[in-house]
Image (spheres, rainbow, N blue to C red):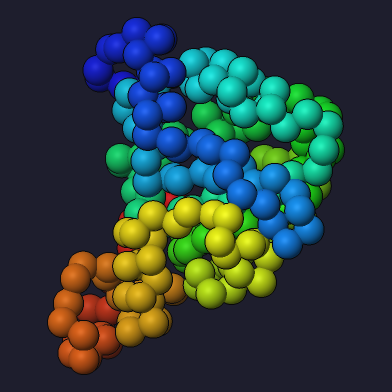
Length: 204
């Protein structure tokens, strides 16, 4: 999975240090939140077996038998940098204990992007059993998240808030019809109708 080789213990320390997975806050129904920051995932450095071991020992074991939700922040995820791949995701999902899957009530998917939506709409039901696809809740803007999550109990990274603000000025980014490269606010959102069609964002 990676050209760099680090020990299993170093990989576990890296996952913990980056706080990719964190049980943090509660939703409006009082359920625990498992927050996942996709951008922080060092896909090139981690073994899937180490990841599954970390989740089993540090996350799943702390969820007990009570209902919980997942807050997955997709902002900044790029296929070549921090996306582990479909087979890896399926392997991790299959390793989740049955009682944990049963207690998962919702997955809030923040800043999903066009390609993620298309993939899940096409293959979501095939890759994820147990009704997970039906529990997905797309959250296009952080303001919509507060309808489900207690605002003062969850920490959202600054880069996510910055991207959310960009989307307010450049809504075509939601549909992959505009690059997410920085531009001066107030400039035209799409420079050319022809070029805009080919500026699809490379987000998985």
